[in-house]
Image 1 (cartoon, rainbow, N blue to C red):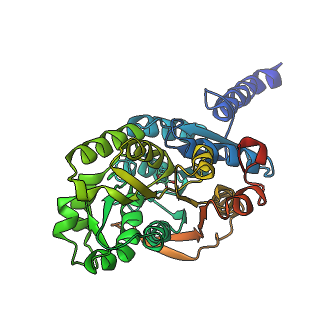
Image 2 (image 1 turned 135 degrees about the horizontal axis):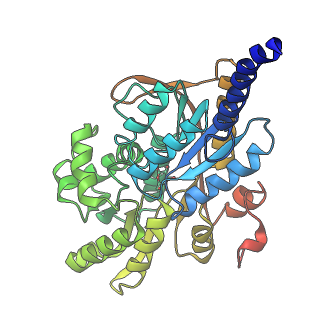
Length: 368
Ligand code: BGC
């Protein structure tokens, strides 16, 4: 009996421990998660692509994971990260809605000993980022600019510039790449900037500072929003004098904005022809390219980015050092990075690049 009495407190402790452990495992709201993935929004096909590719690739790993969307809100993003921390994640793969604002979320993750991998977009001005997995975003912008140069018609061709959201570090990298090739062609008279007084004021400057870029980007930003892009394009065409129409070149930062800008330019009878860039190889834009409504896209094979980030996460979980190929200055620290290449796609190679590579199926398009 005495023995039993002695054993009771022990049994109680054991039972309490069991309850605590199971509460931890379930985090109060579901089971334990090894890798948390946070993506910016479901409203853009680009990030739904990433979700799908993550889901496909994660089937092959032994680690558990959960993907959450921030729906364009940094507050929601922070909530998502907090929820994942509560589920015991060891690695966070996060594509920030806003590069600066995401610092708070990743700092909370670091405090909980989580390894932070910035995915596609860099998280800026914080030391709480361990790795960055990205496409070569400067090369994306270069490819867009070079395409406009290769398809330029005559001299003094009107050039309409558009950019991504200023809260996204990538918008700067894309613009930097585009400007590096376009600026000499603006300076030599091949192009005349049609829609940005700030770009006109800086047109003789080969290398722009971040402030210079900011000035232009804030004038021609689409905020990554097709509606904003459409409104801006309409305003620009309404204001344009006759010789800023005819055959025009348009730097559109991504596919979503490219399609809406293209629709606006196509509906102006004084615009005889236009070359318009894009990026992401979104299905809708591939159809536009096949139909001749968008000139090109930059194909960023999300399968590779996903593969690289999962490999990085697994290395961390297995206590190994992830493979990196360089680094990016995020304004606070040099973040070790793994970078992957991009490919230009237009009507000529769309089939080889996207169908033969099994990225998409031929049946998803008409007129291939
Ligand atoms: C991504 C692009 C995307 C854009 C808008 C950028 O950071 O790199 O692929 O089109 O954000 O979501």
